[in-house]
Image 1 (cartoon, helix red, strand yellow):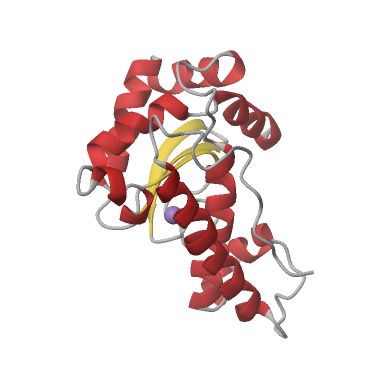
Image 2 (cartoon, rainbow, N blue to C red; image 1 turned 120 degrees about the vertical axis):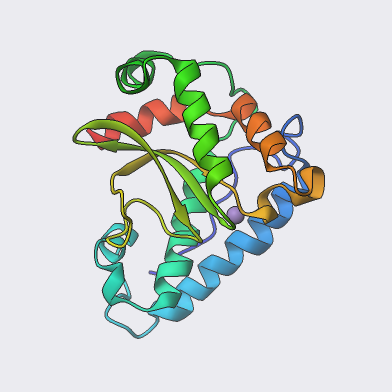
Length: 201
Ligand code: MN
């Protein structure tokens, strides 16, 4: 069963107050679609054909660079689309709010720390909020790596992720990653973050 490109749960222009429609369309139909195609090519006829992404990530250091890059690209973007919503923004409630306060002291302190991580990631990569046995932690990864991979220095289950590749923001924000990260907070789907945290156990 080959991997397929998921539909977005909203229209391309739905997040326009933060991310423009053209960026969303290219990001989904070109970038994400290419990761899916190349992932399927990479696993076709190999031991990984039919495996799920999580099991690939747990042993990704033993697999090809193509599986690592394109498997990560497919997983990360599938997660990212669901973490954005035209009805998003504001502050979290429920378990996420409690877990953030426990780990970082306050929502504002968390937001500042996550933003610092996203701006500090040199080049292309992702900033993450992850669930770990020790509670929530902030980390980042290069390229299309993620914290489920055995190569990640800080491992855990992603509950929030931010794509800081230039392809995610360049049309509107050019080199201004800080402006993109600021705009991201206005479309974060905290309901989805709560769902992921609950599923992470
Ligand atoms: Mn991307």
